[in-house]
Every structure is written in structure tokens, then in C-alpha cells.
Length: 494
Image (cartoon, rainbow, N blue to C red):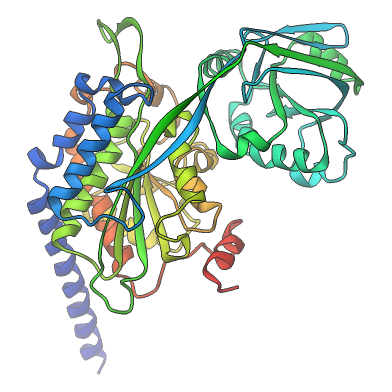
């Protein structure tokens, strides 16, 4: 009997291995390198001028993705305009002049402080400094009729800044509800990071629909003088004056399509595969990697991710899994997760039918033996992702920032609504110099990518999606995860 059991187990394992090998071969046959990498080469080409949302080439990129979907037989989603979810938002340009006064200290707009939502303002009210605070902490403070000053992060710790910055929308919503008149956030990161932050807010940027209902928010760079007065506790009048802001409308589109599943019981459930197809566009010309350049091609970020989604659509159109597959390439991620936030608030396929979202967003890589799963340990699909990566000779690690990247990509707008949604990324042992060598740089081009690694990345992504879509049990948030309750509420299984 014992020998029969062992033989049975060996046969079962052999069958599973054979099925896995067969799928790997199918993926390779459907997506040979020349075919699989063609979208990467095109989307990251100079012809598309960096896919900035303020340039006409962004529409060329969207049409290209839609044409790819159509050529595979991917279906259009009822409620979309062909393969597009179209919407319009406002781009706001920062004020031409502005000044802030706190006690005897003065700050200049664009240099010492920035405004998160550009709008002309004259605000003069009592200011109360409350330090680094959470939603729970704000609930214990009387904020009505006050400018509330908080800390973003702790001194010279950029990771803590990223975490606090990700919580700003929730704090702004709560302060608005409780009757505060403005929020002043003290920047506690590094000097170099302040340069990047101020540069971002000194450019026109898209306004999220819910931002228009939030109170005015300013971010102020920390100085020794400001530190001195706040260290003693601070309650006094403060004034913020901003003039010369401008607004214009901008038309945007997510690209969306689906493939129907084969299982009669599971076909109304969807596994969602996503990436963003926009990038930074064209900037000032400068020397980088030995050449004068001005186009942010965004090969890694995120033509690579969009390529993997296109290749997944090509594969699943020929080999549909049990559940239906939904494909979305988002617009305007670089402007603040705009496309994914819009879909989360205006879903065409209801979120409760989307049982899992495997997002892709890439910065760069420092280890081609790895896949970094941002959200490792947070959902029950980890086993499928690890198994798929192992089939391509790779292992899986987690977020190299300790969890902060989870809030910084297109997985998050759906995740906070309850959809289990990690981000599948290139291998990063650390989020350090090797990553920043290419991340948001002019040199992020196809010519300096490891394309053999890119092929393994694509294959592992498709295989992981297949395992998740074919599993009779839907993937869920892990027990005890901070978003488990949101998932239970979304799917009605509290």
C-alpha cells in the first residue's frame, strides 16, 4: 500500500510538471521573441515621444494597444467606446505668485512651498501644529476653523515620507469633513527629494475628481527656523496667498478588453491584468549615457508592463482559462494613478466580479534571477506566482522599500476597494542606485535592457495569471491583512 501511495504521488507530480511544461511551451510558441518584444520596441520608440499625456502620441499608443487587442480577437467590454474608457479631467497650472507667512517666517511659492491642488487662494487663520499624525490621531483634535500643520515623514527618511504621503488623501478627506480650512504638511525628507517634489508640483498636473472637494493643501520644506518654532509647540495665525493659477480640460483614455472564460461556473469572474502605458514625454535636452537626449522613452517604465499585458492577451485569446480575463492599460499613472483611480470609481466590469488584479509597474532591475512582487504575503495567490516564476528559473521577493511601493502604483486604487491586487515587477534587491540609474531617466531605453530577462518576465507573468484564473478557489486577501475587511465587504462574504 505504501509503495502504491508513493507511486501515485510520483505520477501526480509528473502529471503536474508535464502540464506546466506544456503551458510554458504554448506561451513560447504564441510569443516568440520577435513577436513578444515588438510592442516594447514600438511603445518605447522615439516615434512615440515618451507617451506623455500632454502630447498627441499618447493617443497613437492607445490606438496601437487597441489594434493589438482587436487583432487577437479580444472582445470589447459593453459600456466602453470600442476598446476605450474615455474621460475628461482638468489640468491645473500652479500659481504665478504666492507667499506663505507663519509667525515671522516667510516662504515663496515654488521654492519653499508648493500647492497640491492649484487654485487661487487667500487663507488667513489660526495654525495648529500636530506633528506626524494618523487618521485616528486627527479624530482626537479640534481642527474646525484652523490651518492644521502635520509632518510628512521623519527627518531625512525618504521611506517614511513615502508612507505618509500615501496617506495624505485620507487625512485630507477627514480634515475636510471635520471643518479644517487648510492643511500645511511639513516636508521631512532629504534635500534632493524636496527638489524632485517641488519640480513635480511646479508643473501642470491632473486633478483627481475627489481632489476638488478637499481642503487646500500646501507642502512646506522644513528649515532650521521652522524647526525651531515648531519644536516648542505652535499656535498662531498663518497666511497663504496664491494667485495666477490656470485650468484646462484634457481628454484621457484607458484601453480595455476581455476574453471570456471556459468554465460555466467561473466565467462571470474576472482576473484583471493591468499596466500603465503613459510615461514622462519630452523634457529638456541633456547628456545622458554619452548622448544628447530629450525623450523619456520609458522602456522599463512601463512599456515593458504594457508589452506583457499585450502578450498575455495574445496567449489567452488562443488558450482561454476557466475564468474570464480582463485587460486594462491605464493612462496617466505618472500624474498620480489617474487612470486606475478613474476605473476604480467608474468600473465598467463591476469590481465584485474582479476576483484578482495582477498589475505590472517597472522601475528597473538589479537582479535578473528575481521577480519582485509588491504585496508578497498579502494575498493567497503567492503560491501560483512563485510556481510560475520557478518554471522560468526565477525566485520571488517582496517590496524592497518595505511595503511603500504598494501604495504607489495602479494596483492600489482597486486594492483599497477590496480587490486583491499586488504589482508584479522586475527583480529589485534594493530600491537604490542601480534602479535609479534608469528609473525616470532619459536612458530608460530598449537598447540597454536584458531582453532574455524580459522574455522570462513575460512568460512568468502569463503563467501566473493562468494559474490564478484556473484555480477553482478564488484568490483572496490573506487572513489578517489590513485590506481583508474591504475584500469581505466587496464580495459580500463578511
